[in-house]
Length: 274
Image (cartoon, rainbow, N blue to C red; front, side, top):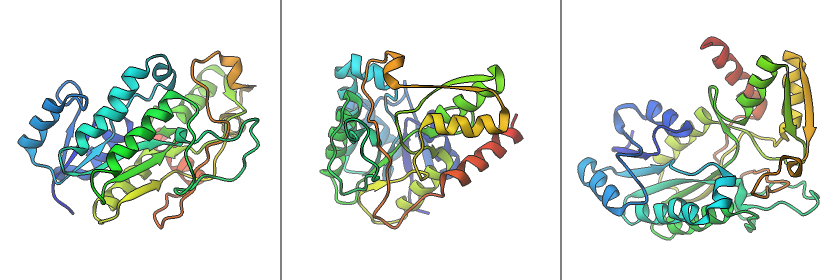
C-alpha cells in the first residue's frame, strides 16, 4: 500500500467507500473542516497530514443547481480542483459523463471512450470539463475519472427506483436518457488500484452496459411488481438539459464488473443490511 491519502468530500457516497477501503492509510475530510474552494483550508490540511496523494470526491452533484448557479459550479468544480492541484501532491479527481452531450434527437448509439471529444450541454458538464484541465495540467500522473449515476446503499438513482417500487408500488422513470450506473464500492476499489500505479490521464470507470432509468425500472418491477410510468426528461421541467446518450466505455486496461453483476451485489447488500 502506498503512503497516506487525503480524501476530500469524505462524507459523500464515494468518499465513504474510499475511507473504509483505505483504512489507516487514509485521512478523510469534508466540510466544514476541509473546503476545497479555500486555498487556506487546503494548505492547512496538507501541512498537517502531509499526504502523498489526494482523491477529490467533493462536488455539487445537483445538475440543476449548477445550471441555476454557474458561479458556484465553477467555484467548486474548477477553482476547487485547481486549489488541490496546486499543492503539488498527486491528484485523482472525479468527473462525469456529462462532459459528453450525446447526439441531438438521441441518435448516437456508440459509447464514448477516453479519446472522444467532449461537448457538454449543461453547466455541470462544462465546469467538470474545465476542472479536468486543471488536474491534468498540474502533474503527468494526475488522474481524471469519468463516471456516472453513482449508487450504493440507499443513495443514488438506482436505489431511488427500487425503493419507490418497493414502498409505493410505482415509479416515474425517464426513457430518453442512456448512461451507465456505477456501484460506488467498485469505483472505490478501482481508485485504490490506480493509487498503487504511476498511471496518469483520463479513465472511464462505470458498470457497463448503459441503461435508461426506465429500462432499469422495468427490470426492478419484474422482481418487486408495481407500475412504471415512462416519461421524457422534458416532462419533468428541470433546469438543466441532459445528454440523451452518454454511455461510457474504456480504451484502457482497468475495468469494472458488468452492471448486472453490480446490481445483484447491491441488492444482496441492501437486503443483508435492511
